[in-house]
Length: 180
Image 1 (cartoon, rainbow, N blue to C red):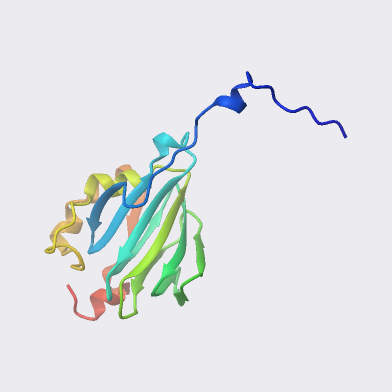
Image 2: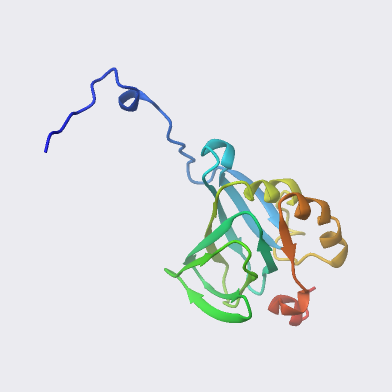
């Protein structure tokens, strides 16, 4: 085997292409009571990846939906979260990983007593821009408060543009429990 190390004038040696987002930085928005911080947008990853941190208050979550363009993956850092996968539910805990292929109906609800932290990945990137477009800056009035029907109606155009489909809310446990 022959090994040819790059020279100091090789672009791979000197290129500074890594994206580093320090802790506590990113663009933060609230959607449906969850707090999302976008850490990496597709525009900074040559389109290959979108990445968010999600802080999910107890009893809150994402209503059932599907992405038509992106696969989505979750890594549960802390908490107890029930994931909807098609027509089944599964309780996930810290350290669990969930991969959702595009076109799969899914959602989640924090069923624990404390805030759950999720890392959310989109491949290819792009869906994270939806969060920036429709989300609101965090305030005490919107954190932990599920959206009402009027708020969901207001995002119909962005849902179409981002090739996302929402499914009936009766499948969302945080709505069945009367937290609307």
